[in-house]
Image (cartoon, rainbow, N blue to C red; front, top):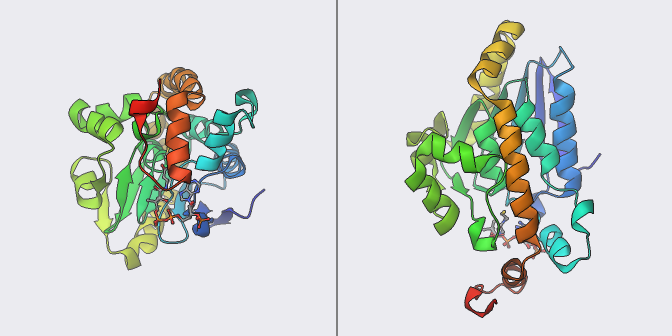
Length: 258
Ligand code: COA
């Protein structure tokens, strides 16, 4: 358990609140495990009819904790011992319970790719989605290399992945990543109302509908394929330069990397 994820169950809705606002909800191994365990457990808990993911603070999440990435790159954390995002992204891929997301501010990296596994997505007007994997010398994860181009088209997805294009709330809605853009003050209530509406529906019918709409095994296979490349890149000299640049608050210089 970690205080950085608040788990609350009420009225058939399991609410998972990211709660590390001083670090912009950057995700640690403990946070991934707490989120993944809660999502996995919901599949066997008939009292959970819907999952709602939201965040405290001024942004949804700054993505994976870059200190944790740097520790793998330096060898401080052996790659095999890394407690990374797979606990969350595999739980999302195989989830049977519907998931609603309420996103305020930035959603970086896995903050955006997890939305592709959610069934309804509500964005505050200040939401900003980015997947800057290549800027960090990494590669897409969470089956996003498959799901994002399928959802928004290759050209847009390539621009997000490789150029790090930031997608604002209106564009994300127009591109089909989100259902609605709402004023920040109404975000939680709108998302909760949607979760309550799902929770009131016949659960077997909802679960079968969700399963029929997704190819969970294909997502899990792609997550594994992406994961091999991700781990290799995490240990690369170009990633070392990217992580050092973040730590030293400067632009990376990939021209120097051999
Ligand atoms: N990992 C670890 N710590 C992070 C973090 C991350 N991904 N993102 C932010 N933080 C920390 C900062 O180091 C800072 O800590 P400090 O107060 O101890 O110095 C604190 O959170 C506040 O971050 P700051 O950068 O000052 O906030 P900001 O509002 O100016 O900028 C971001 C927010 C998200 C634009 C910026 O923090 C950022 O680019 N973070 C990295 C995002 C990223 O590349 N994630 C990985 C994707 S795969």
